[in-house]
Image (cartoon, rainbow, N blue to C red):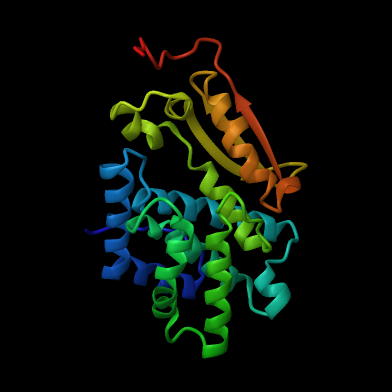
Length: 258
């Protein structure tokens, strides 16, 4: 179970140590594996282990960095006087652990992730912060984890970017497992229609999301699933989305029997 969790730390020495610890932690790696046993092997869903957390971590970290460059303050800076580098650690930890509850069950996995996370977070931060700071880092990480739940509104910038990043992991590779397993429905078909997702710095709006589709069925994925996540992210006015629909569409389903 050797996972290469390569996150661009950008000179953040504490984040580098945390990422190294995540890579080498047997419990974390086992929970990532067990999450995929539940999601993929038992339920026919897409990856909720190493591939997913790597994508979400990179996207969330990138969005946080863009927003900070545009003058926004992470809440751990605003409310507790910690640094932007600490906000980056919160975002990566939250992205890394937000789905480990799948190891128990997909139903209520957000809450189950919170049950499993505290000792892991403490271990990842051991020796890097004093006890008070480590406690703040832990609860801020857990807030960012639970805020990816569709019914919970993020109260921090860090939680907002994790929520959006989780929703942006929607390229077609993420749907191939349930699709091949026979789950031919609007969810799997629309997910297979999403060819590429890119997050870049925008011109007038801080974050620009560029989505390329191979089939217009992908509109469902964007309108029904991504829209709600972004609307309830707390950073809706900081994000713009451009969707490219092809003139010639790729056939996703050849036939369907009911």
